[in-house]
Image (cartoon, rainbow, N blue to C red; front, side):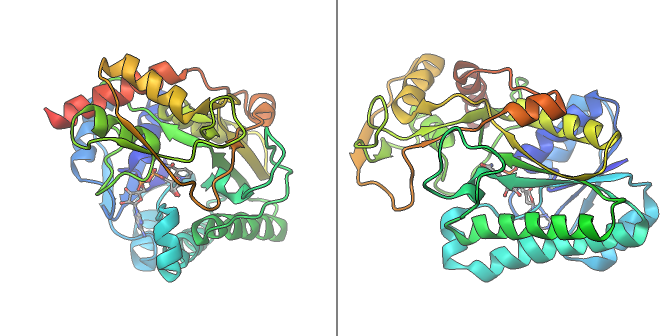
Amino acid sequence: MILVTGGTGYIGSHTCIELSRAGFEVVVLDSLANSSSDVVGRLEQLTGKPTVFYEGDVRDEALLAKIFAEREVTGVIHFAGLKSLSDSLRDPLAYYSSNVAGTVAVLKAMQVAGCRTFIFSSSATVYGAFQAMPVNEDSVCAPITAYGRTKFHVEQMLSDLQASDPAWGIVSLRYFNPVGAHESGLIGERPLGTPANLVPYLAQVAAGERSALKIYGRDYETRDGTGVRDYVHVVDLAKGHVAALQHLARSRGHLVVNLGTGRGTSVLEMVNAFERASNKKIACEFTDRRSGDVDVCVADVSRARDLLGWSAEHDVDRMCIDAWRWQSMIDA
Ligand SMILES: NC(=O)c1ccc[n+]([C@@H]2O[C@H](COP(=O)([O-])OP(=O)(O)OC[C@H]3O[C@@H](n4cnc5c(N)ncnc54)[C@H](O)[C@@H]3O)[C@@H](O)[C@H]2O)c1
């Protein structure tokens, strides 16, 4: 059985479906800090199986011990944590507590239970600015936010842990920009308040819930002056976790892997793709650059292909079609 922390969240819920499709049994632990208990029922609807769900915090050691005592957990995929770059600068202790102390608690419980298979949700934000593109996993990391540093510290901790006990099999997955939703329209990203990411914002503008998209900067050194990023469909990303788990069935160590498409899309290209998907005109307003934003951030995806046998399949049109379907369902 695979313990999925943060399993009712955006990426976690899609991963539960792909795990189930691949024949894994799943147990979910989530505090519902940034998700809803509705997702549990939707997972049951999509997988056709009951969802084993524990509501609680990953820092709750007694609860972790109970889960490991009650379930035969053979591996953990650890999504639970906080993810806003800007909030992490305002309240770093909340981020270190949730993301670093939370991970320590999960790893300690695994150690006691004798479970040594762990997949960690890391992020391309660990690379920071000024990298040669496409960026590969051996690039020097220099995260520029507290959030990015929590991810980087955890990766380093995982290397130390694996070095101390070679029985551990660990994969840190550095996600680029996850977007889109499940094609059923039943699960997707549900941002609280103003969306921090481009595609949920675009969806709300297309739905008439916001007047215009603010584009930060049009003087980047890119083909149209707007920032270029590597967007990856959340279902592809979810399948990357299954591939990582399958890799750990045959090998130990701590492997760090980028999950992206290797292709860059500018903000304006994404706006066009969303207009095509929604058949709506999206108003845009240009404003100043944000500090720390880079011109281009695109993954070198060769390690994922060579070692995990994984490549993303969906293009940005499909990402926007699925994101728009999801937006239309939540507005219905
Ligand atoms: N979405 C992205 O753009 C992105 C990019 C890179 C990395 N990541 C990482 O991937 C992981 C999942 O991201 P997501 O987009 O699905 O976020 P999400 O907020 O939708 O999911 C995280 C889930 O964890 C739960 N949670 C938060 N703190 C918890 C705690 N202390 N104990 C138990 N549950 C807790 C939340 O309720 C939520 O359901 C996070 O670790 C995030 O940092 C996300």
